[in-house]
Length: 166
Image 1 (cartoon, rainbow, N blue to C red):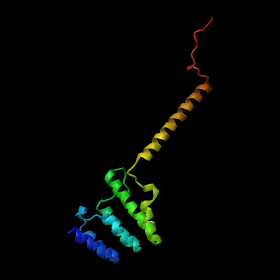
Image 2: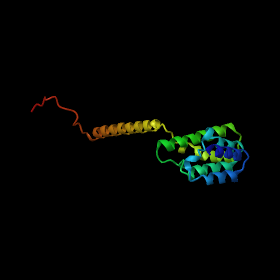
Image 3: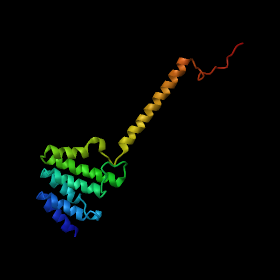
């Protein structure tokens, strides 16, 4: 059954039959795990982009969002959502670079692939930046404290050598 659905979707995408793609996806929407739009390395997306079909691209994206296969803006680094979101971005970027498309299609892709919403499954770089910033803040705080003591004349850290002569 999956094979027939995929064949039909490929045919409809290749021929720019947006209504048939929409109806097919709508028909199987409740069976979320039946249709994987990343099938065959994102062929459905690539077909929409290669034919400069903004409406078809939007239908495919709307299906993924409505079936919760992917969140519009993943709020955390949930591995499953992050992986799918990154895969979507990768497929869209590759197709954008491979095909000459209209400003509308490029704009739609850029809205999904902009750097502000690029959710990497590898959060180490963000973590490293946070740690560096924290240590920098602590260093600044320590320097401020030392400077404050010097300015106030607080020499409590300096100990007498016990040579007190009265």
